[in-house]
Image 1: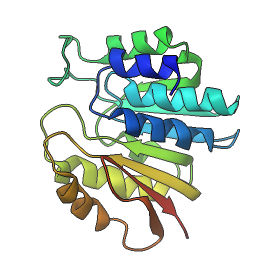
Image 2 (image 1 turned 30 degrees about the horizontal axis):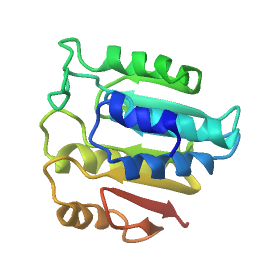
Image 3 (image 1 turned 135 degrees about the vertical axis):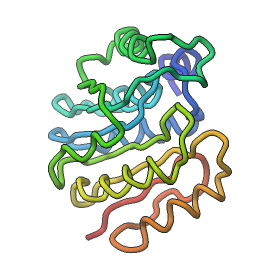
Image 4 (image 1 turned 90 degrees about the vertical axis):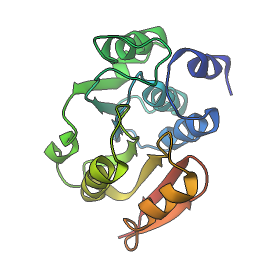
Amino acid sequence: MSTKFDSLINIAGGTLSPESCQRLFNLAKDVPEDGVIFDVYAGEGRSTIALALGLEDGEHVPARIVSLDTHVTNPMSSTPHEDGTILKFLGHLRRFRVAHRVYTMVAPDNALSIFNKRSANLIVIQAPTYPVSIDNVMDKAIETAKEIIRRNGRIALACPQGVSQAEFLRFVDCHFISGFRGLVTKGDLLIYEETK
């Protein structure tokens, strides 16, 4: 990993492991020039920046990231903002010089549903940072992601804090019975590829 990427882990709060950030970085490098990545529940921006750095490294000049989050206060943060995570998120984008890659949307939980079918090459879904059942929010996000992913696109799902990886895998697998194959089915970041 580069020094810039190492510093991301130390600066931008989040629950994704360094290995998962590296996987996102590598996934973004494979997105085509006309590609679109959706990062759902981006929090303070760790995943968004890892993706943006991957686009930079892959030299996909026009490819963009759409980052969606409610940006409510993050109780998992070591330095929570009473205004939520948006100020930290925007500051981190500027600090890592990737703001030009990211369209930021402060949006409700169901924001993915406003996008057209087959509009994304890669969708990253994390659990929101506020206390919530993964069944309620992630169910909807996964089903919507399956509708808007492009042919041969990928969906990456981050295991929420406080949920065992085995429990998360059981929860996620029921959503990907047909039309998808598991590329990474172990660890804290599960990756599925559309095969229809």
